[in-house]
Image (cartoon, rainbow, N blue to C red):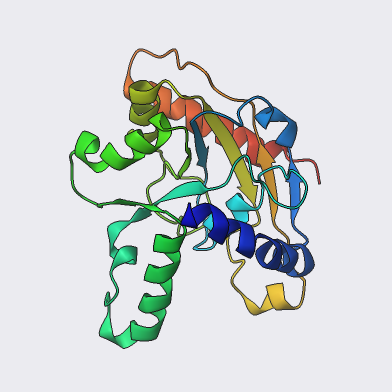
Length: 223
């Protein structure tokens, strides 16, 4: 698969940059043991446009790269797939569109109001054994705080039966700044235990439980 090769080739350049400039740390990889060969739904907070790069590097390595977990397929807004999203940002939009396509990202349409239609490809991917990463908040946080989650993550779990792995990202808000080049920022990521079943009376309560676990990971990270 092109995406698996692409992520393997870009793994060390991205990981090395994060490690050097952002003092990148990972905790909880042991919680992924036994999840190598089936579909998995990763769910995390979202406070930076480079969260997919931060998250992808958190997968456990076998020899040189995380071959058993690659490719990690991220849900991304449909507009990022458009080659000519904005004429004023033409070169940038080309690069972004090329990246999300090579990375096998899964497009979702904001404001579609049809959750089943919007997640058809994501459901297929999980059922095929792919690792799919969803940001339940639906968009990048404007202040770095964890926002209310949307029902997509619960719907995906119910339709596939795949475990949800909550992930907390610390330090991603404002990471795209000059301070990072000066090595004054840091990024940490903590992987939680898989949620194999969500016991809740309503989807809203189930989403709240997922977001609570993400929040607990963010607040409990050991420096």
